[in-house]
Amino acid sequence: MKMKKADEMIPSYVTNIFSFDITPYAKWKEFQKNDLICREGDDLSDLVFLIKGNAKLFLTHENGKVTIIDFFKSPTLFGEMEFMGAQKFTNGVIALDKCVCILLPLRETSHLLRNDTKFLNYLCLFLCRKALRNTSNYATNQNYPLVNRLANFILLSADGEIYNRKHTEVAEYLGVSYRHLLHVFAVLCEADILQHMDKKRYRIKDFSSLATLAVNENSL
Image (cartoon, rainbow, N blue to C red; front, side, top):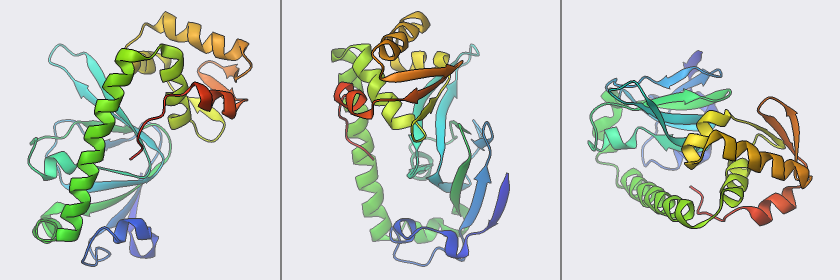
């Protein structure tokens, strides 16, 4: 894990969210695969902008069971629920591959953020889109077969033409059995849409056919 001052490494799509200059406060932080970006149960100390990579949001229940809540694909923001006071402690966020984040420490910037109408307007729009996406996901899970939902998930989470995600986590996230998930992967390979490389790694051979199968959803 590396950390340094952000300076000129902050993308313009992040700085344009604010009406004040965030560069004196922001820090650039790099996480490797399986690094914890946010530790579950901690007080939120930073607003986090994921500008590169993929991560997953998880929740540990009292009985020890871990539930995958969501998968994040850059660019996106997290920590907004804690910032707004909707929940006190953070859920866990772990890097699925190399991730780069811009951290904005709330101790130094909270008073600026709460009075920045430009940022607050962005945050309202972000939360609305997130709510619409969650509603769309729920409706999709209720009305579409697994092959369509999996095709969409592969396109959203693949790194270029390579898909590499744990089957157990994806099965839980999509609400299906491990066996059912493997069967649909086999169907996609037989159709020459995917190529099974090793273990959980697949290569997308036919993007067009995969996109045709995928259920269109609103993107953040």
